Amino acid sequence: MIWNEKIECASRDEMTHIQSENLIKTVQRIYHNIPSYRAKMQEKGLLPGDIKSVEDLSKLPFTNKSDLRDNYPFGMFSVPMSEIVRVHASSGTTGKPTVVGYTRNDLQMWAEVVTRALCMAGVHKNDIVQIAYGYGLFTGGLGLHYGTENLGATVIPISGGNTKKQIQLMQDFGTSVIACTPSYALFMAEIMEEMGIAPDSLNLRGGIFGAEPWSENMRREIESKLKLKAIDIYGLSEVVGPGVSCECEQQAGMHVNEDHFIPEIIDPETLEPVPKGELGELVFSTVTKEGIPILRYRTRDLTRLNYQKCTCGRTLVRMEKCTGRSDDMLIIRGVNVFPSQIESVLLEMSETEPHYQLIVEREGTLDVMKLLVEVQEQFFSDEIRELEALRKKITANIQGTLGISVDVKLVEPKTIERTAGKSKRVIDNRKI
Amino acid sequence: MKAKQVSVFLENKSGRLNEVAQILGEAGINISAFTVADTSDFGVLRLIVSEPEKACSVLKENQFSARTTDVVLANSPNRPGALSKMLKILNAEGVFIEYLYAFTMNEETAVIVIRPTNIDKCIASLEKNRDALLSNNNYKL
Image 1 (spheres, chains in turn green, yellow):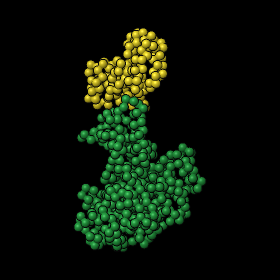
Image 2: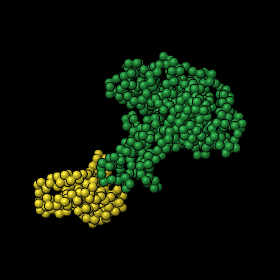
Image 3: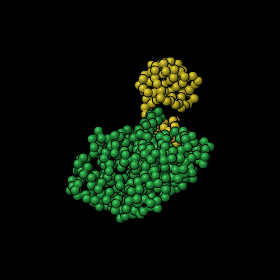
Image 4: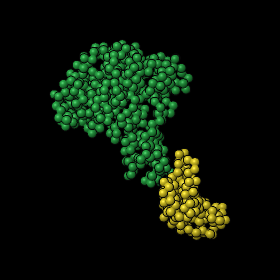
């Protein structure tokens, strides 16, 4: 089923028209309400009137994650706080989270795009949808929640974790669709096997998986282990949350809800748009959002766009699975991790910068993060008790900053490989 | 007697202890005693050597984390009950011990290496009870 056929199957001309109209309004709104972005436009000698259609999009300055951080917490909001009905936040690069705000209209729009996404995935109102994304500041849980309710399907708002209970409710409630990170889906499959529960005996038929990168191999593994159709959903809180784009049942690229979020692909080096269909960094402009409208937001995700009409009937542009990042951000169990966050935690604990190395591995189905810290002079104590205390403190501080657990190991100086004097900070051993 | 002990951070990897021994041997430094305190991932090697400062710098040159730590070296009669006598006194004086180890000099004398939380208090307590400890004869501080 196509939830909003008029939009999702619109011709390119119709879509361009809708986008242009809304872009013009958004540029006006941002220029008048967000001083930091107005300053950027003025630097380029741009007035709101210079943007007459989506053709002019590339004239506009970019927005970076740092802009949100510099204007923490609410400096990028374009409406008074009395209009904001909810905030979400994701982890930031220096301990400060990235905060986004939603008006009542924004929440309605978000629910609509998630509903479209669910329909793309083949979910319908008779489904029982178990939402195992975290509920809270993270957009995953609540984003899926309201979209599913809007569709009219049944929500099981179980949130993340508590795997045995997840499986028990699948059995008892007859869950037909599971929504979670792909690595958690594999983890659940493992626990099911341990519990002696055959996936065939469950009512599962679909899975909405996102919030972290995953490969076609992983899709095949999930599909064969859980006996369901695995659908990729994409989103980021700066744009709206989950539901920015989603695969349809053809599993041939994620349809972008481009009447709300206009995608562009740029060359991350030159910052110029790349020719149609080529690989580059994904950039989004939101054109209907009120709380925190954002123009040319650099996602740092690498992908390409496909404007061909899909066999499902939709004309919404499709983005490929993201193949990498144009920065050093890692996504570990759905959480964004920047090496600089770890650096700042370690710096807070000592005067000189310690050498460290982050090793990410996939053990079984879950990502684990190991942190090696060289015991330099400033850290070395003769007493085991103090070294253990140091290890625990690093562990706790990093966990507190990132929100995910880390296995800290103290190592001898110079054991971390240096390249040209600088040590290699991150090793990602995950075969995704 | 207050003395400098050399402490070295070691990962639990094979061959590391030998590397330390080799570096010290090549530098002409004699090891009188050592002990290893370990956890599952790492350990601290503690050494009593002929030239602690030199040992420390030569280890650092070889990229080890090394430092000197003040310890108390107390000679004790090498006979049953002597250690207990010393510990009893330190306990009574309220001296808290982080760790200790010992080696024997000869048939007559053993050396107890003590790392107390308060070095001066430990030495003072031993001095004060010198007579009681010396009743075993051969006791030196």
